[in-house]
Length: 180
Image (tube, rainbow, N blue to C red; front, top):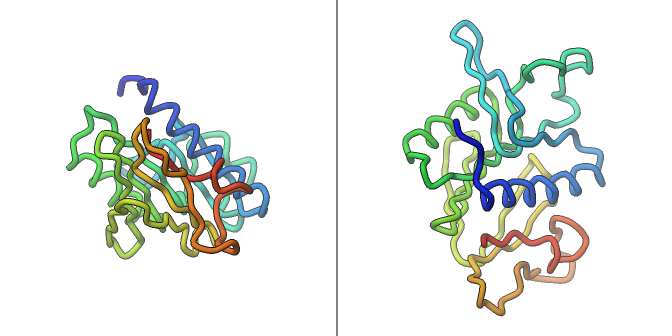
């Protein structure tokens, strides 16, 4: 697979940073960046490397077993779709994560400015407009409103429905998900 292009890499890093901040503040587990291999199946080995992955502390392999590919399915996977990715290939990867024990997969399509959240029961939910991206029981109390803003949009990137609405990070305007 060729290296990621600029926007793809920047978006993956932005999302990884926000998830990592949330996870570290709460001591929930480990966040892994692109190119980290996860072994999802043995015999005919299946190793995938998502753009961002999160594994809960109680599911992490012992430290000595983390030097090679991770022998656990991530609890959360974030895949940023490249313009050259085929829909069927992305869906195959999503199902492989879920079948191996993954609990939540977020598929981000920059060109369509959409996010699809897949859950362990194989249900997919497309987020429209300014809906809330929710970490469910994988990232408890992590909810953030995102927008499909254009460069000319004056709409804030994240808008809490109430002052008490939990969200990624400390400031809604700095930590909302915005697809460029």
